[in-house]
Length: 371
Ligand code: PMP
Image (cartoon, rainbow, N blue to C red; front, side):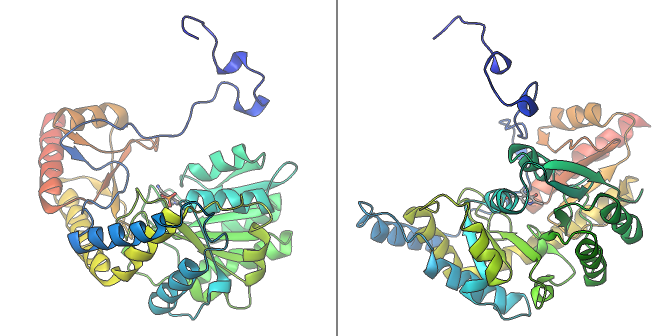
């Protein structure tokens, strides 16, 4: 079917999808790519070999459907959380899916949906509102302070006013890098229970890079609190597509009402299990990236940029009269950063020391051009 001028809006698509474009950062072929918060370090060779072994093993039974409940994988994820999250969890507390985006989608399919609403405190991870739209959940844009931190009182007021069914708290937040403390989550959880009660989802995609501990212990005694995590960032495995959640076992039972049967392929499960065997090596890269993130913050400030404190593997900086023009000027130096649409600000992911040097050189030059 070529030559036909038929577009999406000519099809009988749902009204709320008309005139919309798909989510996605530009995937440009430039030397330094610091735009999607990926881990710059390829997986170490011994892990690559272990993945090949485990995938070969899985291949021998690919004629069969995979373990629908991913029991071995959830058990190993629970061990990882118990070891690093300062709170014991078992496989009955853990659920896994193809990236934390799918985890969040399953949560909204279960707890949101037509006639229901979700709130996030923006600017934040834009997929929260897009997954809300895709699942027919109404979206409420909640407030955030001028300095990009969460204002507990204003957020609690918004929850009381709108009584949403799902509350998203992103910590560390994307794109700002700001994290919240346990007191903030507890206050918003209380507000959400009083208003509805609703499900509170703490999106901890970047928590391994944080100065703060995971908020995992808060799930104890709070069945409506969910912690969402991913292997895309700290484990350096964005291509694997493996996200997971920790919550009361009833939440794990509930999402199974909407998950597609056999949603996690045997190849995915085998690869994730191999990566979890190498947790300590992979977390070693996290330490290097935290040091590089701190260097980026310090050097950007020394150059004269305004920088938001970061608990993640990326840094928000500015200010620019026109962030998009600045984005293009940095790109002209062969460095791809992200324009998240936050006025006057851009976001850079911490890369290898050499990549970060190239970025700093580009923004130093940009500052000189602006003076
Ligand atoms: N949450 C946040 C805050 C993110 O920034 C991202 C990735 N950009 C995700 C969730 C989704 O990650 P994934 O689906 O790769 O696990």
